[in-house]
Image (tube, rainbow, N blue to C red; front, side):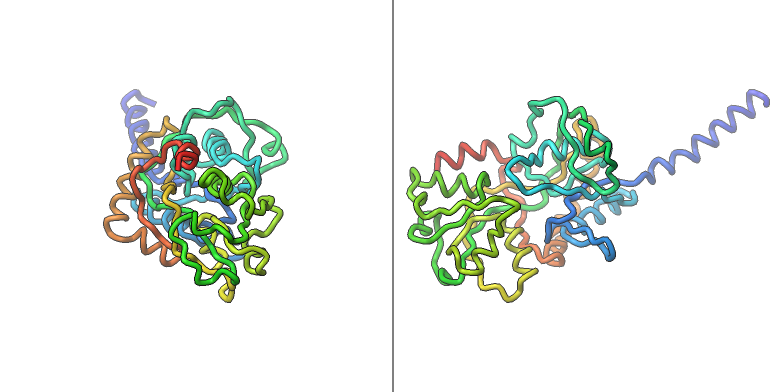
Length: 307
């Protein structure tokens, strides 16, 4: 083969390879059981706010979407930060959706390695090995995620304008949760005598509230949306009160993938301006609240203690 012919063939191959790279799938990790944000159905279409948004983001940047589903354990030992970092650092996805944007969730991890959460397609070896961790970088936020007070049947109609209005009620909260810190530290422990602690992942917090075992709890708003959708005749009700310290949610990727984060930010800005993100929330049954300042929440534990 002549040198000129070889150069021409190389140029042709390079030209053909360029659009193939541009069409590489956009891989996004989503929690498989987190309604109404994201739900993986084995025998039906996947659903949820984050699924709709991921589809729109991929379309905006001109890449097919690939969702990597994973399972996040609801217990005191789980770490969403380390789980997300492990998935990204292992190349399971380029972005993790629905990530709480707080300063402590974005700092360089204190450990060098972490185990992967269970994910679709994981092997026995995947469940045993540890992954070298990278540094996380956030996208712009796309939804505000506050905590809200939910009332049991015996407390229906109770006016809640502040945490202090919960005094005298039988309160239930999951141990180690953000809501636990709020209730336990409020006004130097004024509510402690009325608090019952439940075990995350074992006790049914909202179920005990619906049975009338307790009068109120403080949980993530999206979690109440999910319960209400699954139990349309439930006796528990929204108080309408949102705790003033809440976190925005967005995507998180590796700091080394800045070009992708920038492209996603442009797509998010356009979708927000068109009202599409709020529309996705409505379709998914999510009480959608737009992001609030600060975009990244500071030391949430100190803010709670100082209130």
